[in-house]
Amino acid sequence: MMLAPLPRAAANRRLAWIVALAAAGSFAFAFALVPLYSTFCDLTGLNGATGIAAPAAMKEAAARWVTVEFTSTVMPGLPWRFEPVQRRVRVHPGEPVTAFYRATNLAPRAIDGQAVMSVMPETAATHLKKAECFCFERQALRSGETRDMPLIFFLTPDLPEDVNTVTLSYAFFPLGSGTH
Image 1 (cartoon, helix red, strand yellow):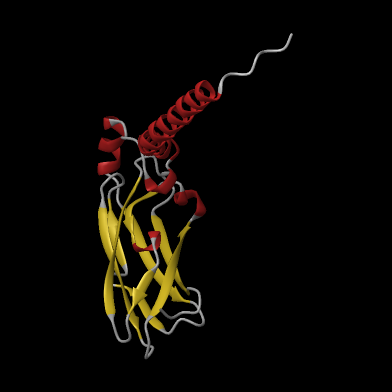
Image 2: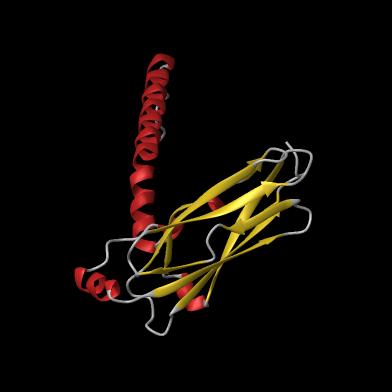
């Protein structure tokens, strides 16, 4: 059995409704994407997002001290001086910490760089949560410019007991042609 074709005006109205519903659905999906992504990050720890620790774990962690050491490396091709402002801090797991790294562009031109972090020991990496980090985006420094770049982080209260020292090491790499 074959269906009779719709008159052109009815077909156009039907198509307009389908397009309007698709546009509304796309808008609703885009609107819901941000809270869905935030929830996903909270559940998985992606991008340094974490859930809230249990009060008992926080109390135990407040009595414990962990030393966090900061190191830095500038990769070949990037004429910058880059170093931690403070070499080490003592922290309680669960408490936010603000530290700074200082970068200076030694080149006669503006250069962009990107930092990559590593954590030692490896078992501590999943327990380090960054709220803010200069490594999240490229850094552009003008010739001779010096900038203090913040790092806000905490160690989760469930950091293994045998981890007493955590080393955060940042390596800065040149980006693209190195100029802008």
